Length: 402
Image 1 (tube, one colour):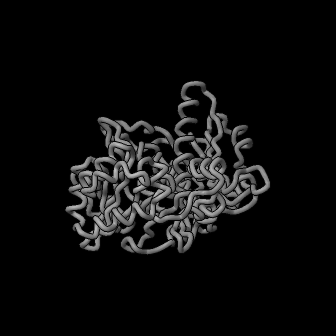
Image 2 (image 1 turned 60 degrees about the horizontal axis):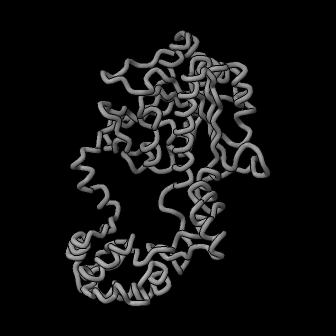
């Protein structure tokens, strides 16, 4: 399949075609990052509505905030894969693709004849990348999963919150983790194919992706005998660490990372240099053991300072700190403006929405930041590329295949 003309600075994945049976968050996050690097991503959606993430909300000029974030720079074709004609079109797409991505329900890809072993026989150079809830083998292979279920199963929810109760993480961390590992796995598979000629299948599960992120609290629990407590912005093994309320009602978060910083905090911020050698606080372990007493001293000092002064004094002491932003504070962050990180991306219907550049800058290259597609927007063009004439396309549409 002929990719669109490359940009003047050819992106690393220009010429790579990705076909994706994707929905929700994790797989679309992986493929959007491939599109950022220049890959042609053809998103296969259901006729009559497309990816159900399109309807999670309608806050961005009538579009879903999730969908807008995850699907820029892609092409959308609608196909009813329950029909033989729809599956035939998919087969044509796969015959010209480099990568096939899917995060369908357990067993659905195999029922379509799109399991990794079957595709390897038909398309030896095709890299297959599958994303599941709990893996494609084992006792939970047939269980559906979504982000919060996986946060619960990995124990993350038991660590998040405070003494009053647990809480989910504020973003879809299991989906994001899985999408990142799927993305890096696909990049590795593309490199392997380029250097050895072998196309290796990639498999990622939401559970195992987030499980990787849970190693530290797992070790702490296994070898310490108890799991880290839920203490809000505080830290289970470091003190002082957390957000404290200043006299103007704003919160400032800081942490002490080493003994030099502890001594500087005592002398230059708390104005009590003798605390540095107080037996209750002499070592990191001592400070954690006497966290309540120490936090009370820090809170008392913050109560006498406005947030700007507190931040300035911490800066002067060489201690990292930050105000606790809400979302408006994040959107107006001076670093994003000063570093020119926002770009306008078109939505279906023509409205523009600011989107952040990908965080990995490649010297001399500008990432692709093209439009978010409407469902099925590119169906006719893609079918024409595959050799379907106008009458054939009209027939597919009349039969509900596209």
